[in-house]
Amino acid sequence: MAKQPTLAKANKKEEEPTFKWEGTDKRGVRVKGELRGSHQNLIKAELRRQGIVPLRVRKKPKPLFTFSDKVNSKDIMLFTPALHHAGFWYCRGASLGHGWEQ
Image 1 (cartoon, rainbow, N blue to C red):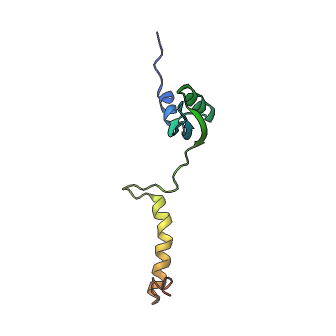
Image 2 (cartoon, one colour):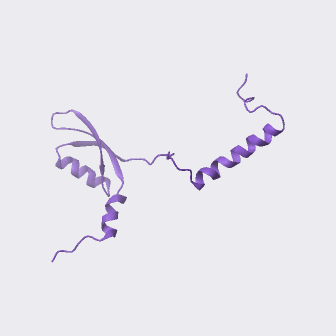
Image 3 (cartoon, helix red, strand yellow):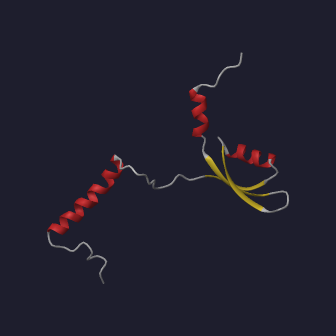
């Protein structure tokens, strides 16, 4: 009897990083794409199996900022000091736009 994959194994595939790649196909045309895999060498091997000569394979960087509809505690922690600082100077009669005026 074959074993069913466990939840840990199913989630492991989702945790694999995404790699951006560039290469040339059999006709010499440059092609680009993204593949998920556990290691750069596995991505290169998969591209070769598909008939693509890999020129560049790099891990896709994670975005610096994520935008969503929800405000989380990290957003509040980052924004509150800036708001407090602006309010401090505004209450003392300083224009909030005075730094941009020339």
